[in-house]
Image 1 (cartoon, rainbow, N blue to C red):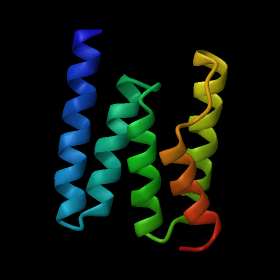
Image 2: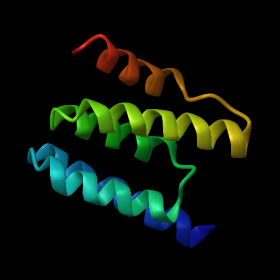
Image 3: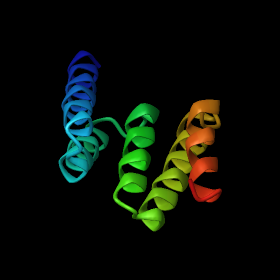
Length: 95
């Protein structure tokens, strides 16, 4: 668990650095790598959705949201947070 948490935090930190520099593809790579390590990390999904949105890749953003919902519901018995749902709603609304 400690290693997984460390890797998740590292993926988030690296992804945020790339996001702040407008390097969306590199941020996507960081978040995908993080999800390969910790597929329950909702924040990684949320950041990945945002990056896909910034890249104009609505289909992958929507697919990622649905993957997040499925993992959280099936494996943890929970729904995505209000923050993740708001990110998804903004994509559906076309923002």
